[in-house]
Length: 326
Image (cartoon, rainbow, N blue to C red; front, side, top):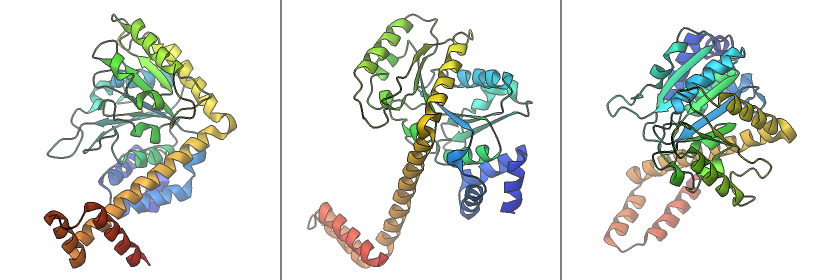
């Protein structure tokens, strides 16, 4: 079954792609087998696909920009996929807003694939299965993947661990002049886009961002010392500034292609994914032990009674886990 699905994905069959993403979204053994088969079939580190991340505050116009990017890249003959991460339904866990509604004009275009994914409590702006979806779309031969985050504010930094080019979308209104100076935002951005630039305050926000870029610390985590993020003013509603935006994205892509920077970035992303998966697996193992191991439960009881410090309990749990591993 998995081999047949991988073959259909490689042929670009829309139903197979959708089915595969659903498998990954739901998780489980089949999802793991599928991702393993895709990894064996092709190396994502060398894949020609470009992953463009769009992140920023809610209401900044990320979906409108995604819609216009689809149109522009399709006009260039490139196949485009969009993963739009939305807030989750508290009942089904699925995406609430459904950004596909905003991109409905592309629904019949066979060169476009759009998928909404629920964030399901993720605080970093991305759904956890988003990386798996990227692997599937890359294997399907898409040229461009637009990864649109849920829009949770300054904490949505996960996109830097999944995208080749991170585009931070801000607006003159809504406090984004303050938002632009938040810790993390300056570090993750490869491009700054001021959307709704026809509104008052766009120039002021652009000057504020340029000023922050002047004082960035070289060698800081996430900062590429050889690339200064351009600040581009656009109006998605009036379709202004899009040519400059695409030119900036092309320039950053060329920059990444030099001296193996793209491969290095994807290697860092793979390492980050390994760390995250290890954290999840270790916590699950500890959680199971807390329910089944009498000595660990006794230690928890001592912590609650105040006769054992939390630090000592952690050391004991780690020691017991290490002995079990041996």
